Image (cartoon, rainbow, N blue to C red; front, top):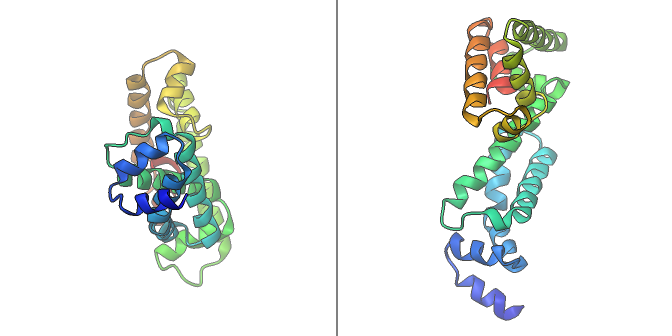
Length: 202
């Protein structure tokens, strides 16, 4: 183990560490974790503002890295891949928590809305949610089905395509068209638009 640690200290590139990780090398994984865990934590914390949630995201990301280690491309930009995973996980958590009071307060604080009753944030969230679901009823059944599978059930484009027996490009086109339609019919109020971005566009 000591020999391995000494060798890894001399490894400077992510690619060398990732190749070892693909071979189930836990020491190499530890070094990748040590290299990025703090950077990832502060990156996520900027969005979530909650230490416990940021720690949860970091743990979730590295667990996924380890579980999918055999699929990682050791020669592509690992840092970009890592931070993209963290960003996606962060947005997913924001979606789940958007209706909770602390996250409504967070959204209001981004706009420096002070001394406003908590009820306003909840009303605006409910207004947005009701508006979006009303607009979804104006879509074709297929568009609505694809959008709900993506945004409410969290399925990937590939998973939706396989489940419905259509191409991935068709799924992407339907979602893009639906998002454009929804955005064009959402009120211009700043808070409403911000919630819309967090819940549906990201």
